[in-house]
Length: 176
Image (cartoon, rainbow, N blue to C red; front, side, top):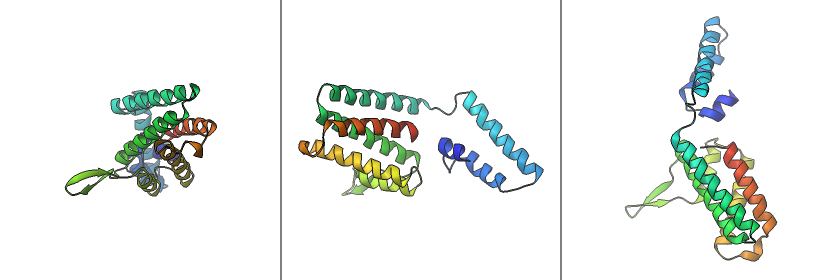
């Protein structure tokens, strides 16, 4: 069930149906459960789990994270932090869309993007990731904000390196 939750999410029909089926102990419940598992195996084998949008997004995010690494290696910790943090923020927006969480609100008839901290909180509430992940994301967003607002002495290159490594791992583990 944890595999199905990670891959499909709790709202997906496979997860919902298997959850109902796994609650029963009759032979027909087992057969329905096996049918769902066979369907999942077929989707994986057929490559249906990966959308073109998801693959393109992952590729673009990888490019940005590689740019951040290159900037850091060239002793440009501040732009590296901004690029890595901005990539994280867009990843949060993509996760919100995947989980049906609004990313904008109306103000004076215009769409206004919601702050990354609010998105982070909403994603945790929705079960997209854990409270520990939320705290890590909060720290990374704080570091990005310090870099974007000229508070360069508030962090160092090693912290930016940890941020880049952490964000890259997080985006791979909590995929769109």
